[in-house]
Image 1: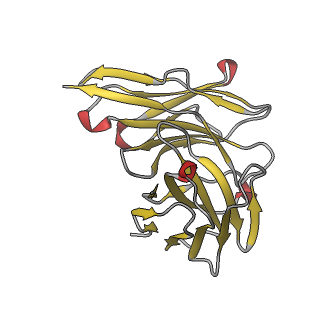
Image 2 (image 1 turned 90 degrees about the vertical axis):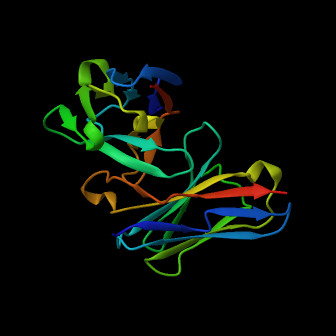
Length: 115
Length: 114
């Protein structure tokens, strides 16, 4: 089945130690998203790619970076994780919205813990 | 500013009972509306979507939703809830200024008792 795959499902890192989360998709969608979701809250959009065009949300901390080397893969880099960055990180994809908003397809997320 | 409101943070129903989850939005034009479900420890799964046409839309898992422009609502319904429906439900509306972005409500947690 075509899908959005996130690795790893669980990630533990130390305070201040860089960490990278990965996302791959077989849907061939040109838009990819990274969300942060804390307990009992809605997903919060960090940034998204329209093809290779990077779109950062105004309130996303500089500590969060992203790379999209090709259509299928997207990475979330947290340069110096703090305790407040412990959360579920969700990757999603969609077709572009030129014909109107498209549904987003989500991976199962990576739960990040900070020691 | 554009927003989505889910007034019920937590709902508890008995298995077999009917269900309605509320969603209200603010949007100037005809909105694109979505309902997603999130089981514990998993990502969001699309239940259904409304773009135009028939205001009663059918989704997966026996869910349906009705768009009511006069009430700015898009409530999710199911006639008979199953224990496996226990999850978090998110309503979302397409952003008015970027067709690649969604605005999510804060979610409703559904608990189902046997």
